[in-house]
Amino acid sequence: MNEPTAGAMAEALQQALRGTRTRNPLVGAAVLDRDGNLAATGFHPGAGSPHAEVNALAAARAAGIDLSKATLVVTLEPCAHHGTTPPCAETIARAGIPRVVFLASDPTEAGGGADFLRERGVTVEKYDDESRLPADSRLLAEQLNARWFRAKREQRPFVIAKSARTFDGYIAARDGSSKWITNAAARSDAHVLRSRVDAIAVGAATALTDNPRLTARDTSERTLVRPARVVFGMRSLRPGSHLDDPATIRLSGAHLASDLRHLYRKGVRSLLIEGGGKLVSSFLRARLVDQFISYVAADLMGSGNPAVSFPGVDSIGERQSWMWDPSGMGASAWLGTGADLNLRLQTIPKEG
Image (cartoon, rainbow, N blue to C red; front, top):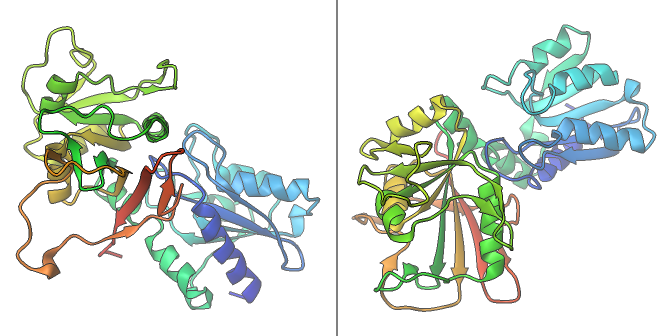
């Protein structure tokens, strides 16, 4: 691969970070003009919105680029299936792009775009010279969607664990009170997160104690989205409570990996674990969390219900290692006028 293609791939990787991790992978794209100059970029904002390739092509057209002599560089093989949006491969073929370069193959049912395009006369190449990328881009290429790929290989949802905690790590006081630890901006951001997932889960104890609605709401408490609702644990729910509903999915929680595969078969591709601390800890202990989002208030309580609690490791080498997730809002971000932080982490992938 030549230097312009390497530069375009590095830019596409940076564009991918502007998206949001939920049921879809992070994808970025770039268009090179006939002279090899970077002409346009695009990214996939999230489920249901136009994909990176579509946005990059639209930006190139708006800039007056002749697509019949251009190259499309994308971080993931263009999709070839009909989902909430049309297949990107069809859009690319209609655009008349003669050459496409992609970084990672798509291992899911959405894959096949490379073959689709080749059959229509498009030159399609897999980017195989990551040594030309800057060091930070090489690392990003490896880690960008590693956890998402793992979830797809295991036929389970992409799992996001969320907690709202004090600076010293508590999600509730000793008397069980927890409203509100974080500020209004943090709570509003959490509802945006809820609106982007297929299902939200709590443990039975939290369902009984808090009677949560598990819906995505705006600042006036109007319900905007109703993801599927999941309760782990078979304790009876209070009659008439929000989750005492035949539509609520009940799972024992005794075998989390099997429970997740069950949800996948029901069409759940992204799952938000809302709590409580015991449920989040169970998923962490089983190493089934792909992204951890923690809203942190600048408050101290000294004791109470901890955000995470499971048997510790005997040796430092046995600890779970995480890294800051640079997608979305970044590794950390202030929320509102208060001191609350939004910390986003993902586990360091050990597999290829």
